[in-house]
Image 1 (cartoon, one colour):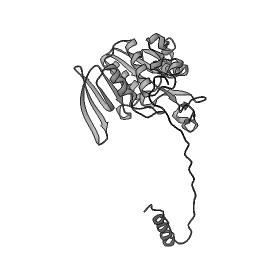
Image 2: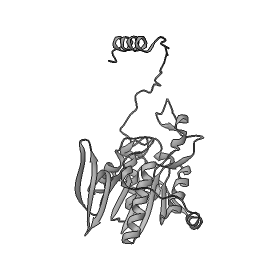
Image 3: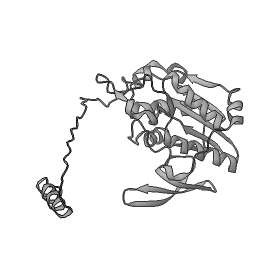
Image 4: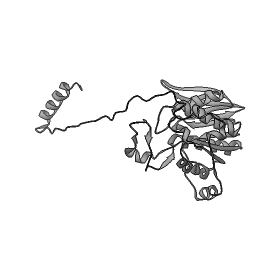
Length: 263
């Protein structure tokens, strides 16, 4: 089974309080914050490795991002991925979800045919949940989103996925694309032997020229989404201590909450 897994490099969620937006470009300012594998993409990597161990075959990891995105791809190699490819070019910067999916589709075609493409349902730093379905459309593949379980059987995937009013069960014919939820599995951790093996592997870096893409179809130039304005919300909080016996305190509290429209 030939599997492609998308691995997005995102700012470390543990340092989310340090993440800011560039007021002019509307993009996330990543300087000074280490990049890690997007949390839900870890579930995608785990599922790809599980299927490889069960069915045989290979797993390739594909990412689009700055040179620093090589680090998370090296981690994917250490986890057991066979091949890692980074699409990196200045002309790719500032892409919206459509331009991102377009470039990833070119990268997937460059790498060859796959039986299955896996990615996290959404990214920590974007949360749009659009790139996976858009990529499937560019590649002409059937797809399912927010998958919580998947089982391959005779060229079909028996899938359970989250929807707004519950869950649905689907059969998806391979080749296909799935975006996965956290419930799908529990990602494995790094092992010392995996880290050692990964040292002998390289991360391949491809530019738009390597993909044969027109720069006007990528990055800001290829993005129809335009950010109008960005503002930082301000919040103010005030506290009040109510003293007295319990019954008086409750009466005063209920009155204040009623006046504020809370109850």
